[in-house]
Image (cartoon, rainbow, N blue to C red; front, side, top):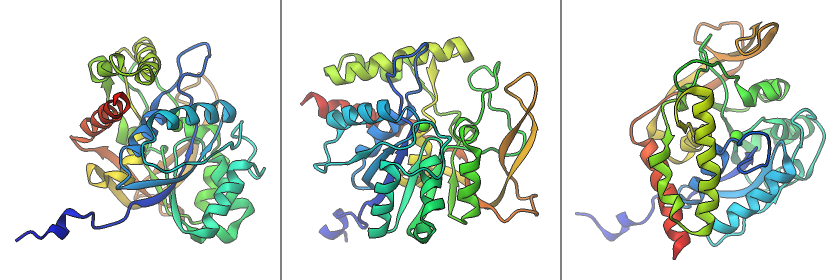
Length: 318
Ligand SMILES: [Ca+2]
């Protein structure tokens, strides 16, 4: 027989740090990536699973700060104030302290927690480089990066190769994280590619509150820009899968304790030259680096992403 106790959550939410290169709505030559914003809205919809202790920004740090505050103002219905800190503006100054690295250090001095780092990992690497005593306080770093050997990144109709953006922006910082022996979770292209938000998936936002409409007005051009680049009208919400590792881990397939290496060879995104690739394989026997590698999203996760956006929108109307 079920007792009333079963209705109570069995575990407390996991307290996490979010480091993000959120750039939704940034005025530029082209529409900008929207996935960090979707991951943030999703995280706010699951206060039973994750509690965001603080948010730090990386690349375009000032714009990211402003837009994060805006989105929190609209969609944070958790009753908790979530502080936001400006991090590295360039993702090429590892070791240089900033508001974000100081705040993250203070947070880790108080408690152990995982870091969800859905941009270049410069802020996290600065923390590790300057405060190695805090490494044991980092339960894990969940990132959107990495590939199985030679896997091309060709979204949509597979006409165009794209880079492993977060890794290629700052490979040195990834090196610092792996050398520190921090538990790493890689949930990148391979895991995320078949999660796809098309026009009909987001139409409801166009009829929502003024806030929802602002979000729609950023998502829709991003979908159309994706059609120009990759042939399909819609986008992959990449950063939702590393969040999903923390909120809905059963929706992903993982290679556990898989060796990781940085391999340098001919670039698949530039006509000439070489570039580094962050790759995982059980065949790599000359590396101490290890990760949990998410290689597949199972059916149902996309529905969770859409439902979370709908719930966020409904709350925003009342
Ligand atoms: Ca991102």
